[in-house]
Amino acid sequence: MRRIDVTGAGGVRLAAWEFADPPKDDKQRAELGCEPGVLLLHGLMGRASHWAGTARWLAERHRAVALDQRGHGQSEKPAGGPFTREAYVDDAEAALVQLDLAPAVLIGHSMGALTAWQLAARRPDLVSGLVICDMRASALGAASQREWSDWFEAWPVPFATLADVRKWFGEDDPWVERPNPARGSFYAEVMTESEDGWGPVFDRDQMLNTRETWVYDAHWEELAQVQCPTLVVRGLDGELGRAEAQEMVRVLPRGEYAEVPDAGHLVHYDQPEGWRAVVEPFLDGVLTG
Image (cartoon, rainbow, N blue to C red; front, side, top):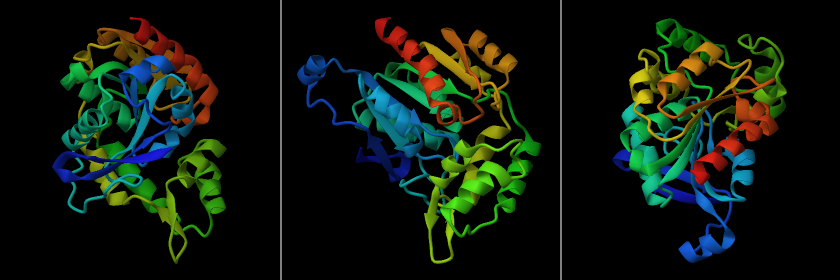
């Protein structure tokens, strides 16, 4: 894995991570049998490393790059933002162009999926395929934003150890219906150590500000503008309900539907084998036309 610096909207420094050495030219790409590039976009509070398992099998055939989005991971976290939808979409567009990935397949989880379909709607010339992982197109509303604010307040930070992080998010978190070790590991990846203990690598106020820019609006109109083949994936216990997921597929001009058993919202992290089993055939279909 190697880091590539990308300049996002407004000059924000972004960290992109490539999970294999790229072909040096088109001839080498053809010799190696490499297919078009893939850009992986994590969800709110996530980071590029959450895609490591996916990126490694993608790299067998594709140039796979995961982006730490603004405010996340090792990318810049500008105090004054902006953390608007436009900024996130502009950043993803800049990454595709600067990394010479386009036309690429975009794979996004949650917030990253929204960014992906908004970019696909805006720049169809840059996107050859799209995978939407557990992201709703409907508005979530003010109550959802209040719940998230209360949830952040409930975090017992700083955590003394990473084991405490895994236990709290995997077992003790009052917002968790049942124990989920994968969820604990997911959040352990976004913690950093300080003199006081372990806390998030991101600013929680910035995360709330980011979320506020999409929760009050529905995003059906932009979804309908996506022209490329699109796979909508949900975990059976995720946040995207089956009825809404199937309606998203109906609205999409070239939509397909898949669900992963025994998976929650973190589909690719909860059930990596089930995730691969639904995504890989879709990518094969995109590439064969």
